[in-house]
Structures are given as C-alpha cells and as structure tokens.
Image (tube, rainbow, N blue to C red; front, side, top):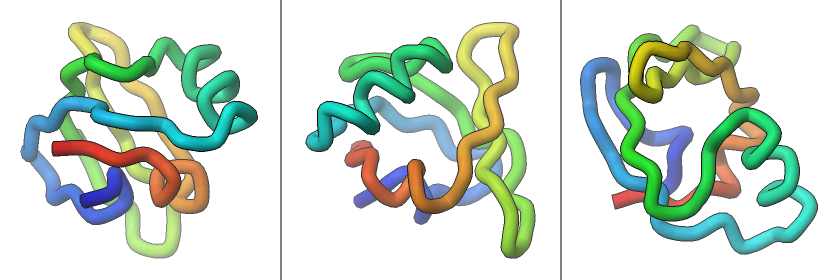
Length: 70
C-alpha cells in the first residue's frame, strides 16, 4: 500500500521510499523509513496531511504515491 491510499485517522509505518530523490525530499520533511505517521486529512485533489508526533506535514499526492507504508 502506498501513502496516497491511507484514510483519515489511519496510522501507518513508512516501509520503503524506493527513489533516492524522493527519499531525500521526504527526509527534509522529517519522514524516513521506519517512522510512524498518522493521516490527519486527505484533501480532495490536493495533498495528504500527515501528523508525526506534534508536527503536521502536507505531502503532494505524487510524492505520497512513491512512499510504501504498512
């Protein structure tokens, strides 16, 4: 399953970020493999808003589609 398919309120663990360029971009947001995140909001035709501890992070759908979660 990829990050762009999670539902609001669902918690998931980042399993894999296969592309090195996307991995670097995700790390800038504070997201790395093994991290637990919770989906705060799924904006229709917009970004996925994640919560990591007390920080909210909005990821574009293209970036979220490249991140594998469980």
